[in-house]
Image 1 (spheres, rainbow, N blue to C red):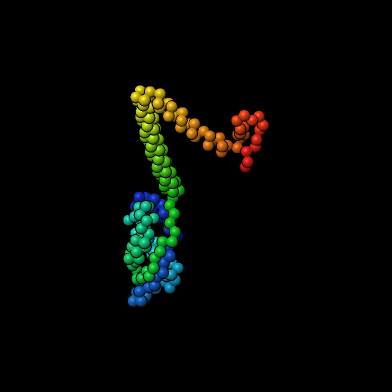
Image 2: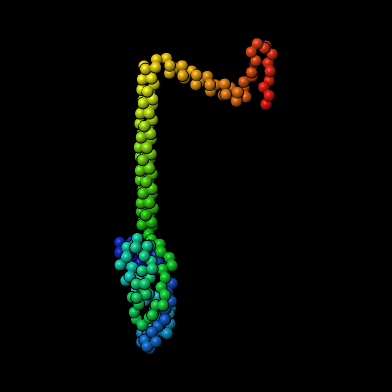
Length: 191
């Protein structure tokens, strides 16, 4: 685990998985300069320095989105007689302030999106109200014109239409009892 800084000066806590081996021709130099326990003493400090030198080239957002590129650059930057066969950034965490700032930004974006949706909904409701009002106005105008030209004919037509619909509605109603004309006895309608 390495704590280092990014290009935009954010603290980054990184966990790496590194598969490495020494260059065979460099083994005598490595053993004399670092010692036989180079895996425990030398490798962590060398990889930490390599990682830090690569990390300062990327800002926090790039570290998240371009992890593979960061791994490749760490692998290419290997020196000191080491061959890095595989480098993987297994875990990235950022400082508390940066994490809170990212969360606040996401909340602000969601609130802005919600506000935009509310505005669009209000505009659509306004259009619906305008169109509906125009429709009612046109209908009233047509009825007024019909009354002028047909006089009482439109009213009589509406009475006939209503008289045609009402009996069917009464027949379907469960709360209506029918009395045949001229009888005073209540008859139950068959179910």
